[in-house]
Length: 213
Image (cartoon, rainbow, N blue to C red):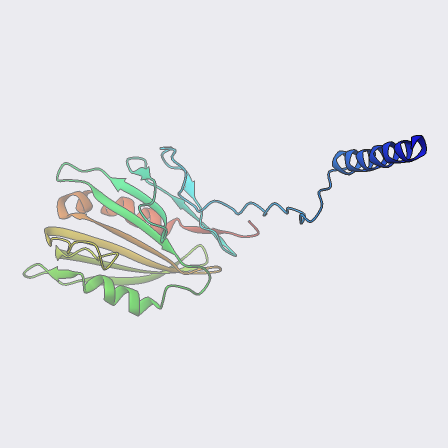
C-alpha cells in the first residue's frame, strides 16, 4: 500500500508541475493564438480638434491635403461617407462643408456627381449654374456653383423628407488625381457662401496630393 500511495503522489506531483510549466510558458490547451489586428489609419477629419488652417488627409494611395480657411470650424463627420466636415459661420446662417472619399476610382464620374448636385437645386429666377475646370498642383478640378432652393439629399430611407431651403447656394468640386477622386460640397445660405466664395476657391486651388504618404 505504501508503494501505491507513493506512486500516486509522484504522479500527481508530475501532472501539477507539467500544468504549472505550461501556464508559465503562456500556453493553454485547445486555445488558438490571438493575433492583434494591425491598427488602421484613422479617417481624415475624424479628429475632434478645432485647429484652424490645419490639413485634413484622406486615406488612400495618395492623401489629399486640404487647408481649411481660418474661420471655418472642423467638426466630427456626421456619417461614415464623409472624410471631412466643417461648419462655415455666417450672419445669415451657417454653411456646411462635406468632403467625400470612396477609395481610388470610387464614387462615380465627374458628370454623374455634378448633375446629381445640380438636381438638388431649383435655380433662382434669372440664375444659371456655372462650371469651370482647371489644373492645379497636378490635379484636375471641376467646380460648380448654383443658387436657388436646395433640397438636401436624404441619407437613409427611414429619415424624414428634408425641407427645401430657399435663398441657398451650392459650391462643389470634383477633384481628380492620384488616389482620387474626391468630392467637395459646400451648401448654405446664399449670403454666407457669397462672403466665403473666394475662400472656397482658394481652398480648392491649393489642394495637393501628398505622395508617398
